[in-house]
Length: 116
Ligand SMILES: [Zn+2]
Image (tube, rainbow, N blue to C red):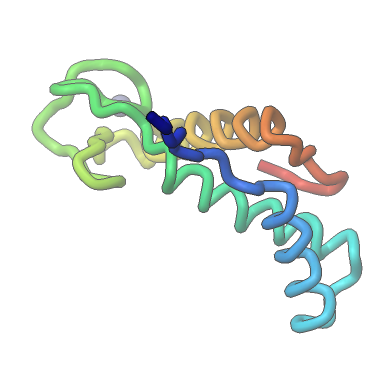
């Protein structure tokens, strides 16, 4: 009996390098600029594959109970809407931080010049 293991790992390093080439050759960016843009692309892709866990009745930005004015920012993930976008910014910081760590674990290091 053969057991086939599902391979969920992605070649994030290869993807990062392909995106660097895309931005350098195809978009005429310097290697440093291309690395920053490619890293941003990879962050989005990593986030899409590893979404934040939904928290019923809780703002994912601040962790407080949802109120009357909320916005769905990511397929059922809610943040407060009436906090001058503070909760939305916090949510962005949270998922980007997770994505940076996820990519680092996969071997993609944060390029110099990348600003979250
Ligand atoms: Zn909030």
